[in-house]
Length: 94
Image (tube, rainbow, N blue to C red; front, side, top):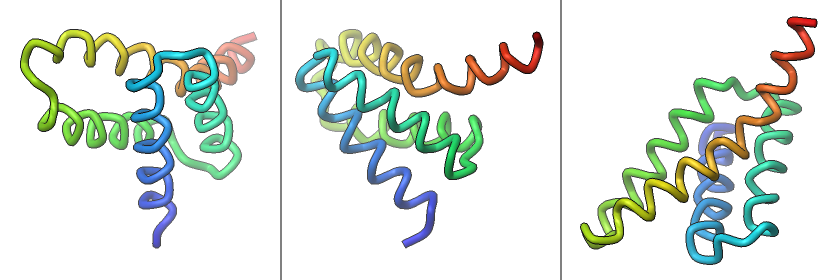
């Protein structure tokens, strides 16, 4: 299994947990996933690509009336995942 496949698997699991629970603990998994991605050398573009791939998969099984709620959850989760990249970027600007 490649590093990108591992990231996709881990992202899918964390995202599905967040969508199901919308809890702080599940959101924390997203943050941890972002931190681990930085440590492993994954880029921001890779994370966004994985996010959209997983979201597209989940959308195929989501009733149309639930798609707005899913989009909101997906946005919240992605922001948490990429927050580590944002913090690093801000430190570089200083």
